[in-house]
Image (cartoon, rainbow, N blue to C red; front, side, top):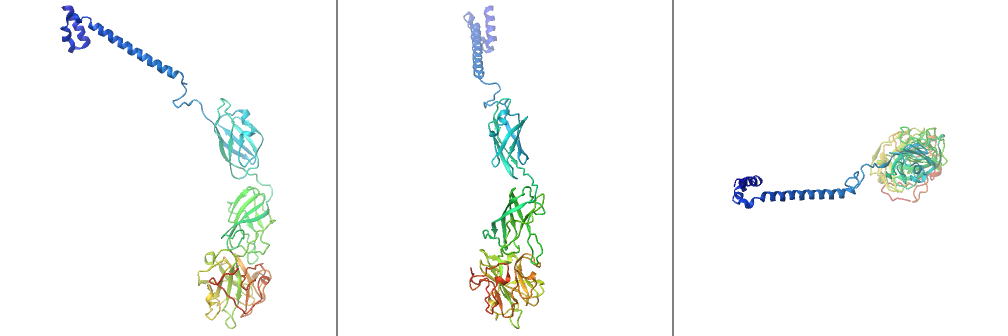
Length: 468
């Protein structure tokens, strides 16, 4: 029994103290049970080991076909991309293309592999390390986009990932002063199409040569006119803005208030790094948007009862108050006086309509009293014999003159072209064609543009019917 007790102890050690009494009651019949269980346990361990080996084998088989350098996405983290990194203009007909690694030499010097809208490539590209130099047609001062195709990396044949880059063109600076061969009005504001009325701005397209490198942002503007003021003194009105479209074209905008010069107009002068032209083959010809259409210098015994009528030649209504219109009278010696104005109406002249400046001394007995739009003091420096009158956009004498009329012995600076005969009291002069057909004739010759003086007065204001 002692041996049985030992076996029982062994079983107890194997299965725990809780099973010891059960095995003790079984005697010799259970003597071999622990060994059998040990064999079963060992077999299970062997099975688990075999399973682990099998699983390991499966995993090994599964991974055997996978490149150890690839990640789970199937990409190769060891291979870097090949890119165009930059393009720069190094001259008016040359650019350099930089790659981030040396490209295939044969492909890199193939002209067909490069394209940039607006440019033409020529010659044979040159390769130095990772940079290709290309010859282009003349560049303009604008951005271009270069596209590269069919170029691979020299080391491994990797195709390009980044194939485009932008660059700013370089223009060749001129070696001679500009020439101006044409001036075309492209827009006006207010919009009167291609008619450059001096009551608004005019945008013009200037063509010629030597415009490359013009600095439109400079404090000294590079585009101006050779215009004169009302006294015949040079003004040199500059364009308020300009854009260099190319070496042969510039777009510029001229302001309101430029004095007219008949059909002759003014030369357009452009300044580049060399100098400026002195004349233009085609001139800028401003047109008077508002003209003086009738003048009455006074009534006998009441010479300060007077009026000046103006006519809107444009296709748009004009708010003269917003425009900043001024009325100036001229003495018999040509001395000007800016008249203080008081608005009776809103001062908006319809297209092909009228407006009346009336002396503040006027009364209801005067035929123009009920159509007056603006009054001015006539106590001094009113409309006089051998005098003159003009409208402008400035209080300063002779500046931004829109239209001017002089009569009698008025000095030359007080009229346009040829002076009118003196206007006697009780008479008015009226611009042609008149008679209900408007007052649109304006050749910048007072004598030619006005009818003979008449005692028939026809004052019309903003409330009067428009005339063509």
